[in-house]
Image (tube, rainbow over all chains, first blue to last red; front, side):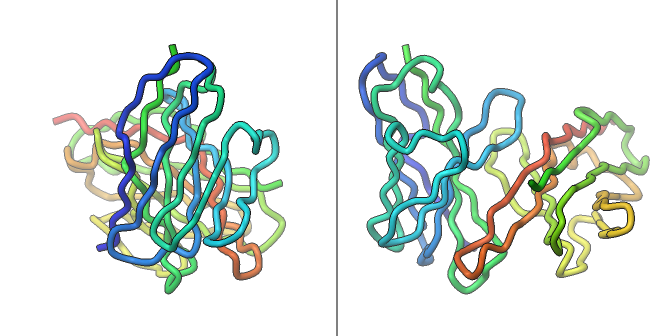
Length: 116
Length: 112
């Protein structure tokens, strides 16, 4: 089956620093990847849609200068949280869509970010 | 704007009892609806989608456009069904991809 990995699985950083999270599709080419944020005991909120080779599309209320997304290849998308603050602490989940199936998204295991 | 509502945050049932998770949606277009499941310490995975009309792990869901609902049902719950369940609505934005809008989730606890 299609597998999506994320790295790191958890990260602690200090306020003001930046942290990069990687999302990889391991056995398929992902024309589109999605980034979600999940607060404790809450649902997933879509942050942005990332298409390979083009700029990401951000959802309303998501700061594109703070959450930088790069989708440089068909198997890798990165989310960089710039100048992180404690309120950015959350669980970040990516998903990838196989170009052959326009409906199904395969989810990564998530990355827990804690900003101190 | 589209919206997905799961009114129950927690459902607790005994093993062998029926379980129904409610999902209502609001969307002016033609919806594509999904149920995702997240077992403890595991990633989110697709359980079923209405377009395939299939039964997975004994679960079924019927899209009722009149009531704008997509409730998930299983006649006999098993302990391994204990998990977090999310109803999701997909918007088709041209051919660029489907954006998923998730409901708040329902935690199912199946007691022995």
